[in-house]
Image 1 (tube, rainbow, N blue to C red):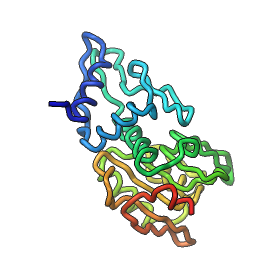
Image 2: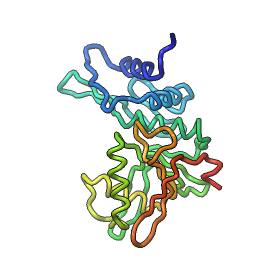
Image 3: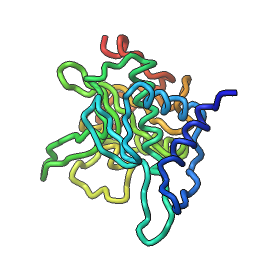
Image 4: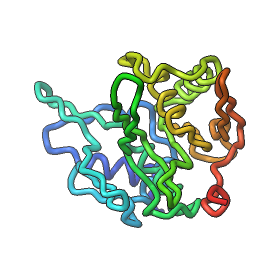
Length: 226
């Protein structure tokens, strides 16, 4: 009987662990849809591993490490969000037809505030041929984090781009959205990778705040660019 994608991914992660090291439980647990998309990303070359390090060659990004090695202990932890991000890349390219050359992974968005310049890393973005950001995918660990960001965006108006945001992740993500005024937003977590999904939006920006229209499915590329 063939292994499930979830078991294949777990076996792959354990194969990266050096002898004598203990890998901590993955928190939250990896979901089957997440594992299936992750395996497809590896099988199709969207993500390429050398040991625990990986690159996203279609975006020219990497290397990143899937694992964190704790120097004073024999323990290793999984950098959990990367699993979701790699899965999302596979879904965008293989299922939704997004051109590889128009995708950005850990994209450094540069923005000039009133007082200073900012460089903000956006998890995953899609550009149009004029390099305008059409879609922003913000990956989260849980649906609770998705809910928190959604409520923050709905309850707050345009942010002060130069205000301190250390420790305030929702404010930082609001800055990303308002500075780009990106039309499509997907809050992707391990349990929100299948459609219909309540965390896919078409965003509108106004003087009083943001309107998030739920559209339940990320549009295919041929629709999002039209």
